[in-house]
Length: 404
View 1 (cartoon, helix red, strand yellow):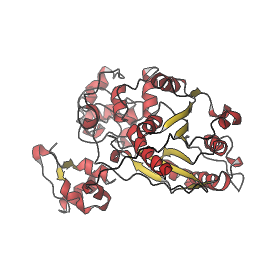
View 2 (cartoon, rainbow, N blue to C red):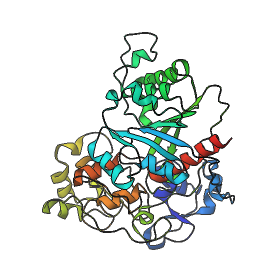
View 3 (cartoon, helix red, strand yellow):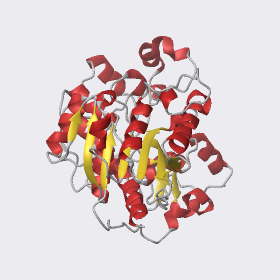
View 4 (tube, helix red, strand yellow):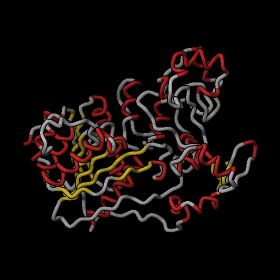
């Protein structure tokens, strides 16, 4: 791709709008474009008109803080370490990590033998075990999104019992960190008509003594992550601590699959070879007909009917079916299995799903971060992780807050 030019698809991703909207701007001459080799490209200068992308023209470099002392983190629901590793890269120290998944814990222990990793159901971690972690500066965790029972009207701390949020809140209440941080899917905002998020904030503010900063949905593509993944962050500041927290400003233009898999801005070498799920011979023949960035809509009519079957006439865009990634766009959000029909993640040019090391690179894990378990387990661990580079920039802001 030409220097300082972006594809229309990439511009759509950066503006969180549709490709058809960008195409309409081009038709109306709101955006000027060129078409070398039939590919629509838009010059960076054309994007000055969008306030959302003003950071692209900011010449001030992001200032990475240095911790004034050793700041420690307790992490629940740690998974294979995306958040913990990102925090470590920022300069925070992992004091304790817990997960219910055996392979995830083995992955953490394999890569960081000095970390205190506990493989245990969080419901079974006693109050006394949490008391031993008092003094930690931060408690973090990505508890799965669960609805609460609204039988009681108050919906306080005790009413959330039985949920994984309750266990997160219990840990925070006992450990009393200066900052607590929860990450989740963006769907938490609208989950159960907004009641779930409202209850979480209510419990944190009224029952366990933390002032909650307005939740922020962070787009990974602006934090050196070649993926469209969005994560919701919820930050609680201990009341009376006098601390402040600011979410990181966008620091980079969008990174692409090429940045993930090829030597360049993110990595010093091409992605190493690794295992990947296999297609059947027929599926391989079908995927061969899908161009980079395309999906089932690009298949010949007969093949389309064969592959889609009953779902052909169902509603919705179904854009994840038979989806092939493009070198010049960020990856779609990774799922826990790249060869599932509804959420296909095929290599840009090879007729196969992404390998697990390609998965790891798109999540910005280093190549020396080893994953333990079966191939399916590796995909699941990586697909569920917080992108390492996104976590790193959240970590920088936590350090800035604690330094003050």
